[in-house]
Length: 336
Image 1 (cartoon, rainbow, N blue to C red):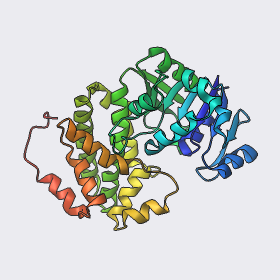
Image 2: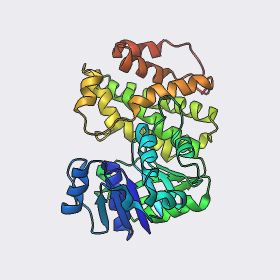
Image 3: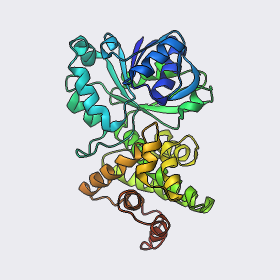
Image 4: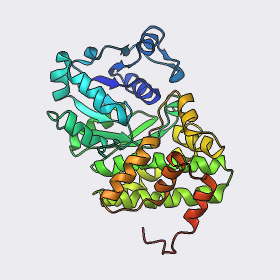
């Protein structure tokens, strides 16, 4: 199969590595010409995934027209950039047929600012002529995937054959893909775990220890589940790879960009400086605001997300904010 990957960050590059090693032809589009040229000439993406050598099955390009005739398009562009990126791609006449017929697979995780749309809803607006959509998500740091570390993720689509096609393209002896029909659940699990990971990083930065981290992850999962179910998700999804699995790895790993942002906040750095010094995007930062506004529209309370928003954008004291969560009204644990 000819696979187009839109976005040559760490995850887009890792998926190119997996698909190419599985025998597929991959066209990896990079927004930055220097990144595309380096990959094409040296087989390495030193900016976003250094040390990983890509096979000859991967061709990298800064020209979106080279994505023509791809049978599957993987979106690895951060959520807040999907709409302008794909609106611009649609203007290429060479891609009109490809955009209408290729399976669209999203791997970014977030909620769009302003519109409060999930990624599937963004694509429904931008690519209205293409009804196919799948989301690929789960506990999967790019740096470990390309080392061949056993990794399991989930692909959700309303069309069973699309999810199964993605499963076949990416499944290897070290990279296993499960299927699901719960698009909402997989999207919300992937989006909100980044916000909880920021809070987890704050716990690390404040050196509050394991008890606090365990409490945060557990109540964070309750918060994500409560929100997702209100939007129409299946609750069991949040106890699977796209929920609990992704939450554990993102809250715990040194590879996690969102946990890193929180850790630096906990150490006293400003959000502006942290984001300025980062090469990659921490999707949990804009999702914090967008998710809160979406939750308010459906009458769901997100107390941890609210505190993260106050810390990031309102100047709230991190330590005081965490202790304020401890003083919320008493309740039964089963009351999700």
